[in-house]
Length: 206
Image (tube, rainbow, N blue to C red; front, top):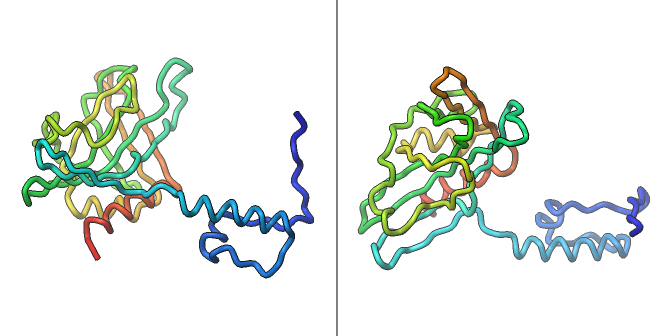
């Protein structure tokens, strides 16, 4: 199948430009107008960054990211080992009692870590460990689906200063410490981190 080639004489339109401008452009090339229409449709169906669900059985309301933040290994772990770790903040509200947590999932195909640390723009966050499954989630289920087949979820209490740091971070990293003194590093940056800022704004309210 022949592949279409980019034509430098054809105006280019980014999704961000269209979403900001509302699609106006003043009669450009017909192809650019068609592209703008498609991008505007994408703006309309873009999934929200934050999701809320109520478990009617337990009365627990959970606010979390629509999808966790993806971090990738900083060193080659080999073709048979998982290169990804994930994290995501979430808030539980049980009859007015609210708690803020950080969910972390790291691979354990190289050994079970004896410590898992989270860094925000190079600064180590002081995150007290929470119980295996925080109160109220036993029946409700985890805030995020397991995405690391070789790992398991860990929960940390998330103080407000730590959330503020994550919400404004340009880089987030996880460091795992294995029993043989080996440390593994996973990190992430870019537009996906804006979801944490959206989460913090959702908790702060209007």
